[in-house]
Amino acid sequence: MAVSNGDRVKVHYEGRVEDGEVFDKSEEKPLEFTVGSGEIIPGFENAVLGMEEGQDKEVKIESQDAYGEKREDLVFEVSKEKLPDNIEPKVGMSLQTKDPNSGRAQIVRVAGVKDESIIIDANHPLAGHTLVFNIKLVGINN
Image 1 (cartoon, rainbow, N blue to C red):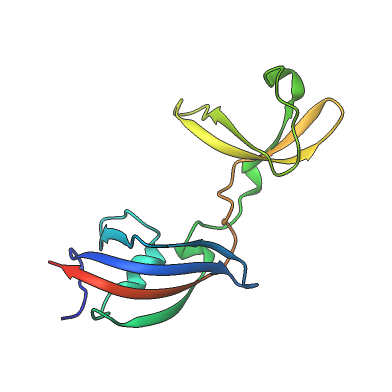
Image 2: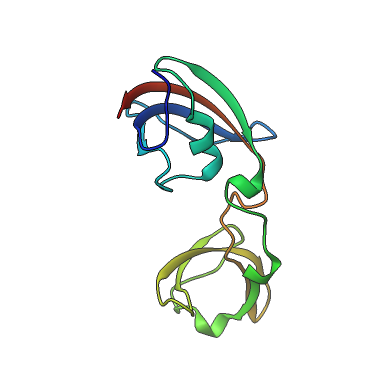
């Protein structure tokens, strides 16, 4: 039986960027999701369509079908005065802030540190990257 839209599937996977660096993988517990529900990135959902239980597959997912292109409008400068006193910003550090439009919490990364300000990058860390996944389908429930 092959996977189709609406099936609940379980997969083991390893995800890496094109240079080979692994960014995520399932360990003992497989990833479970409903195909076509939008729970995961579109390219990964499309990759499992048509797979059969026990099948292994390697798939390359372009950024537009993963976390999107990196957007320069999501990189901006913020005064250090807006940071809590107990935070010493460092490049690569993650910070939690509120989205000014929705009010929801979001995670941003410190992309640069200046004397009086910091550069914040609100893009997903994998935005702009082509991703490579090794996928093994371990279960299908329709």
